[in-house]
Image (cartoon, rainbow, N blue to C red; front, side, top):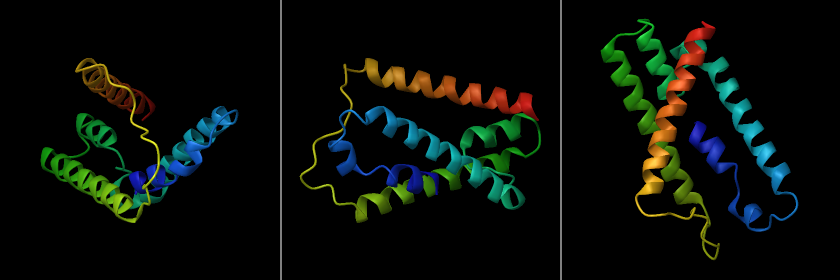
Length: 133
């Protein structure tokens, strides 16, 4: 659901026409995604404990609130949901004639940076959430 709302809410046609309003667009998009995550956690808390992100599921496992089997099942279902939403967006999207929005790459260094940043961000999220409960 997060991929569908967050990624689907960013219309590439609007991004193509951004100029001086880009800062406001970035803020409103980030704020909207953050509010979506908060609302999803609030709404799903009674059903699944608020597991909308693999990092949060990992945090529950590290806090010994769920078993290893449940960890694997939750993460598998979360990835399946994300790929399903991405496929749905790709299927219903009209991306013909739009400029390429892919970020510049600098060989394999960009991939390594993204992986390191994701690992760091996930662990930071786990530690902050563990400290909050």
